[in-house]
Length: 128
Image 1 (cartoon, helix red, strand yellow):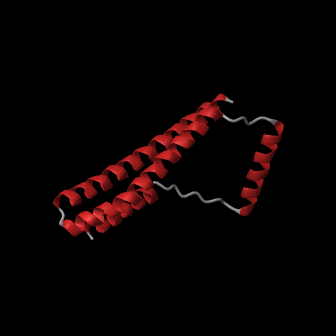
Image 2 (image 1 turned 135 degrees about the vertical axis):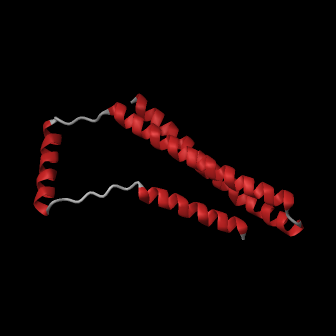
Image 3 (image 1 turned 90 degrees about the horizontal axis):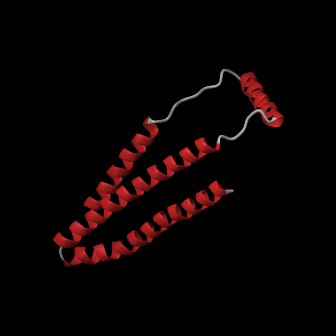
């Protein structure tokens, strides 16, 4: 029960942090949106706007680093809670921890494997 409460509180804090960083943008009117879209399309067709690859690489690296740090922090917190519960728990609690370890390990493999695959694709994309 304590682990579930800790996880719920952690998720609430993370969601609050995510929503506090949102910038609200409102268009003045539908005419401005259409004009902006037309200008964007004309600039793209004329070749005036190019992709800034260094800026794209920096953004990709920043997103990757933030997500991997969040994944590591969540994994460390959950593994610490499970470890403490295993050391201090009764026989029944130890059995519950052992049952919880399988999804935890699979989740870690999925999360960190996904980041590894993402990194491979990013590195291949940078070389092209």
